[in-house]
Amino acid sequence: MAKFIVIEGLIGVGKTSLCRLVEKAWNARLVLEPCERNPFLSSFYEDPQRFAFPTQMFYLASRYMQQLELGQHHLFDEVIVADYLFAKDRLFAEVTLNQDEIDLYDRFAGLLKGGVAKPDFVVFLEAPISIILERIRRRAIGSEQVIQAEYLEQLKERYYRLWARFDACPIYVLDTSHLNYVDDPNDAEHVLSLIRGWLDEAPVPNAPRPFQSAQRNLF
Image (tube, rainbow, N blue to C red; front, side):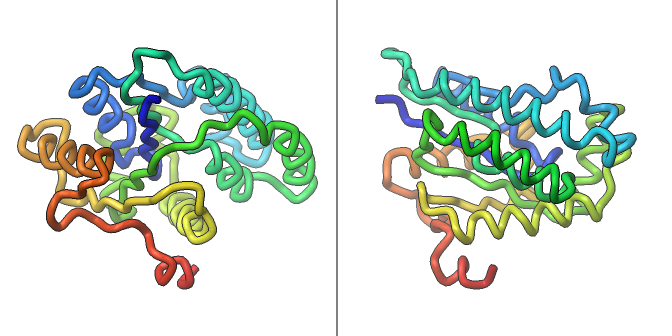
């Protein structure tokens, strides 16, 4: 059966770039969340209160359709890598929706519990908010330029609350502050060696350890 890796983190931290690196290195099957096709996303960044619910529901439906497909592993896939964890969908709902919308969201989400693919492990890419904002600025996607530090701080806090209760698979937190695996072959080789070690259940020396129960108790 294929190994399923999830790369997670805040927008702009480098999730998709790392997924593409894994895809190229090991001919992995690549699964990217459908953010570019969300017709409400640009409007949401400009007016979150008005467009939060349709944006979130589009993501919920699209992500779930991908999860159904992931449940049907292709015989020749050795590695599958995705740039999102389905369980994180509600994190964004918690930040952007009002209580009535959350209640309606939960009704729909409750119908979709079956068929969600379970990853072998999650790699959570970390970096200070200031660095993430600079990466967002450099990649120059117009709709993202209005993203505020406060919004990212809220999301980061909620990610760690999710990790504190998430026990479906190991979570590895990787600090990317000083990594440039897009342009630096040495950094790319280093990160791939970490992931390979986790895949083979033989972590390389000094690799980040799984997010532990002691850490979970902090959140």
